[in-house]
Amino acid sequence: MAIQQNKKTGKWKVEVWYKGKRHLTKSFPLKAQAIKFERDTLTQIETQALTGSQAKDYLYDEIFEFWHVNASTRKRESSLVKDVQMHKQYIAPILSGLRISEINSMHFEKIVTGKIKKGLSKSTVNKVIQHFKAVFNHSFNNDYIARNPSRSFKQLKLDNKEMDFLEHDELDQILTYTNQRFVGEERWIHVFYLTLFLTGMRLGEVLGLEWHKIYFDRDRILVSDSWCSKEHKLLGTTKGKKDRTVPLPSLLKVELAALKNSANGSFIFSNVTGRPIDANNFRSRTWAMTFEACEVRRIRIHDARHTYASLFMMNGGNLYDLKKVLGHVDIKTTEKYAHLSNEYLQEVRDIIQPNIGKRADVLSVNSFSRNLDVTYPPLMSERGKDYAVASV
Image 1 (cartoon, rainbow, N blue to C red):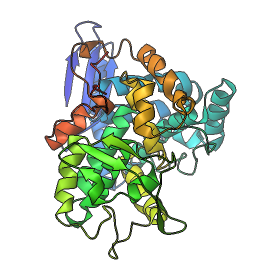
Image 2: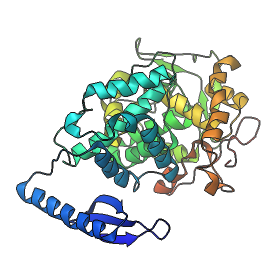
Image 3: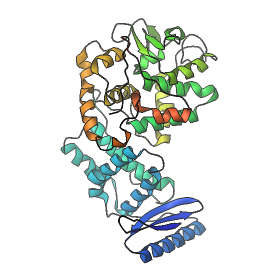
Image 4: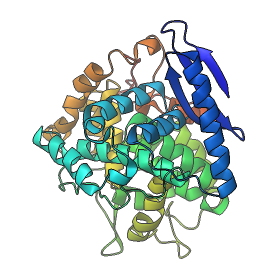
């Protein structure tokens, strides 16, 4: 444990540690208050450890602080800033000052209905839901609280046409997890995630992908077929009715090259019979388990395509190039992503200032690439132009 004075504010900050784990951080105007808090908290923790029970009827503000301390060690600063802003703007006005025993689903409904009335989209409201559930889950999983009032509260069901996508840090979490979790004979699962998120291909196109469509020497993938799961057959055309090529990122190229050594038939993602994997089985088991393990709000598999397109535009990509990569017939279909470029730049104009002048690759998977010790390259269009842009 440690007590230090903040030179700027003059407040005394205390960090409560027990058995090598930081439990709580709090600031006080007087050093004596910090010392008393440190002593009382340690006594409480030790008593709880001896009785075998840590659960306490904390205030919501306290368990948010528990979550915040933990999140600060694993999330990017820009992402954490947005989470705190979301907490202050949407959640704290309803839950602040309440003890866990006082909180129920009615409070969550109040948060949700209030946001919908203000015009927030369902996908945005789901991000709020995911956030307060993460706060409760952290304390419940660490035995700080005896009950999790948010456990049964569900996210809103999105309209079929409503778009949802992962943020940069959420994508990093998912891909870092799959990289560490799926090894050996299960490595294809990690490669499957990479293909979905780093190419923008449709699920049917990924399932129908065959080895001879991967041009390792040209860093290209030929998209010319789509697997129909309902009819269990390969359709000789894509949804756009036209063949197209998409860039093959080096991160994916390395993994595909390794996977090819143990290929079972012509399809890349196949079962023991050599046929494409069962999409429904993957969706209900592996996909759901991955998002739960990462404590990231679950999106649909098709939203991996939206994630690619959204992050592409957030990094300064243009609609014409995106249309070609996604295989849209009409540019109007691609235009639904247009607003993301200016909105995102406006939203993060202050947060990203320290990164000015640094190179940013498409999808901003730099941190994930560092975890793999692989450099993620810029995407190149068929015209030879760079899909990637310098950071704003």
